Structure formats: structure tokens, C-alpha cells
Length: 244
Figure 1: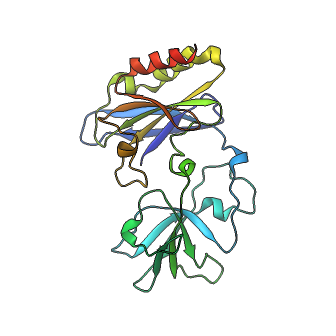
Figure 2: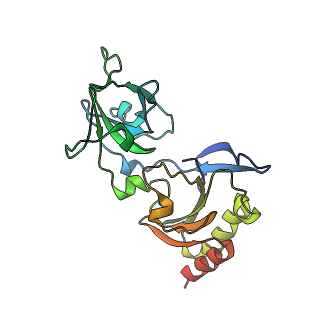
Figure 3: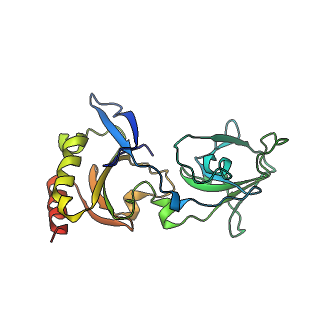
């Protein structure tokens, strides 16, 4: 799932370009990202290499896994977005199972799936996975890219691949500034993010959030979705109601 965000506190500046393939429109936004909340750091164990994967490359028999937090487990909370990828090789002898011990298959692994690879990478490890475990994921882990940080509100624009966004959804600065202006008196900071819907993500957001059509504009707090619509003005009206 492609993802980009805009935050009020700009400790890290990133410029990204999201192209809507098959159309003449290109979505170009400036992104500001908060420093990662150190209180949310998760402890990792040396003998349990845990990361986030995408679907396996069955032709090459490789499962790519992002293991940045596991690699930096002795350095304290990860405060950078530096990615560390690891290619776990597998074959017909590799065991694939769920965390509860039940049998699973490579077809069960989707984008964003939390996995454990045994044995973990070490000085003598050549990259072969004897076991791939699909770990249970919390709601917060599944919805991490959509949920707002504590005491904040996040506006999420979700769209389908190749979709042409209307101007009021595509232009980040006006949307972001108006939302912050509306909620200024509440003391809440507002973030905004753009997500390309991916049916192969570990969560089918279209189904779980009952989105009838794209593009959609959603509002989240730190616990879940508060509002959804296909109309930006309706979203602003909802934010105005939050002031009462």
C-alpha cells in the first residue's frame, strides 16, 4: 500500500511523488512526518527475528522482510525511517505456520503481514528459512498507517490505483490548513495522509471500513475511524461539529 502523510510538527521533511498511472494527473505533495513515538517501542528478542513482509516471490523462492526494528533492538527506540530489508530463502522443506501452531501456506502471506523467520540472521546464517511463522497482529498494528497519534486527528484520503483525484482531495496544503483552522480552538493537531487501496494488504480496508466507493475521505483518532464520506465539505462539517 502506497502511503504518504502530512503532519503539523515537521521534524522530518520528505518530498515524495505519487503518480496515478494511466492518467495525466500526478499527485505531488510535500510530506512532513513526526518523530516516532518512543513510548510505543516494542522489545525484540535476539533469537526471534520479527519483521513485516510482503507476498513471497515464488519464482525466486524468496520472502522479503523489513527487519529494521529487530536489527536495532539494542539501540533503543527506532527514531528514523531507515529501512533494513532481509531476503529469506525458502524451499519445499520450509515450514509455514500460524502463531498458534496451525498450518499455513505462502498464499496466506499478504503485504504488511508480521512474520518471524527461524533461524534469525546471524554471523553464519546464509539466508535459508527453516520456518516462517505468521504472527498474530493487534488492531493497532494493522491500522498503524491510518490511526492518529495520541490526542490528534488524522484525515485519510484513500483511492484506487490509477484513479484521478478531485482537486479538493489532491491538494494537500489547502485541505490540511483548513482542517487545522477549524480545530485550532480544540488544541488538537491534524495530520493528513494519502493511501492507495490495496486489496492484497493484510487488511482489506474497503471491506472492513465498508467503503462503498473511492476516492474516500476518512477521519481517524487514535482508536479508530470517526467519519467517512466521498465529500470533503462533509468532512469539514464533521470537524466543525467536533468543536461543540
